[in-house]
Amino acid sequence: MSAKAPCIAITPGEPAGIGPELITALQGAFEPARLVIVADPALLAERGVKAQPFNPHHAAQSGQLEVLPVDLRAAATPGVLNPANAEYVLETLRIAAHGCLDGLFDAMVTGPIHKGVINDAGQPFSGHTEFLAELTHASTPVMMLVADTLRVALVTTHLPLRDVAQAITPTALEQVIRVLHADLQTRFGISQPRILVAGLNPHAGESGHMGDEEIQVIHPVLARLRDSGMQLTGPLPADTLFTPKLLAQADAVLAMYHDQGLPVLKYAGFGHAVNITLGLPIIRTSVDHGTALDLAGQGQADSSSLCAAVEQAIQLCAASG
Image (cartoon, rainbow, N blue to C red; front, side, top):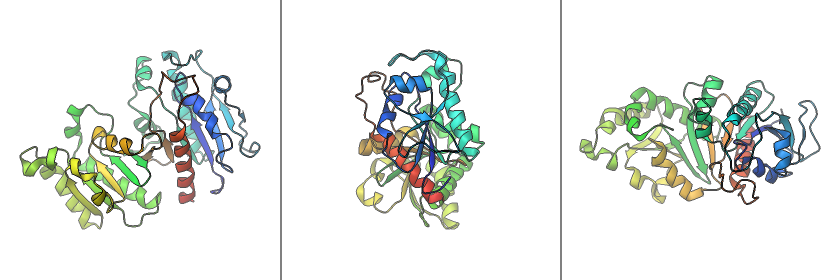
């Protein structure tokens, strides 16, 4: 596909949520890019989405959405979860990801899913990040959210808090930093990324009085990677890391766990933030919100994050050539 006119696969996510109806906002908004919705055409039509059948060899009329059909497993009622459709959701992700791997698509954009209903259907599922990493054989996927100029990546993602410290090993931390550093260079065009690294414990451990992970794990890894030429600052106390003076000196922040970094980012940019999975052999962006079952089918959902995710995917395609 041409870098000037990328072909983007879009999975609307949970069919009972707001994802399908958000697609209406994409109509004619991102020309000349081709936007291919991987979903059930009847579901899209019910939610007011107009799309033409996808033909990989012939683009639809300029600005027209296209649809690659995947059948629902059961009827979808707005706001009502149905475990029978869990496999439908996973199948849309498989088709989009394999299409990216095979060169059919240049990137994929994912709508909101409901992890609980997928697990209720007997499918172990911790999130898009982990699922796509397994699907694409990526050893170290890294979740990063972006809101305007703020970029926040995570060492650990969807783990219970009690398991976080054990998961932050020297090997795991180094692998995440290397992926973050490399993707900031290759996908964002930052030749010498400057990364702020949070500590794990309050006050970054207070010299070992509030935990020794900073001394035993984080400090040694950062020192070793600095010696290789990386610009890494930290470990810093998370409660003072997100200040304008420090952020002005950085291209990205690395938080140790999900709710250490993402509340700040979502406060700064909820509704237009974008979730990007680094470390994959494909480009994947996503919305920053959930399924909003209480709003589904009412036409009141805000499409800003989905539009931002599509725009970010197009930019990443252009940067990757």
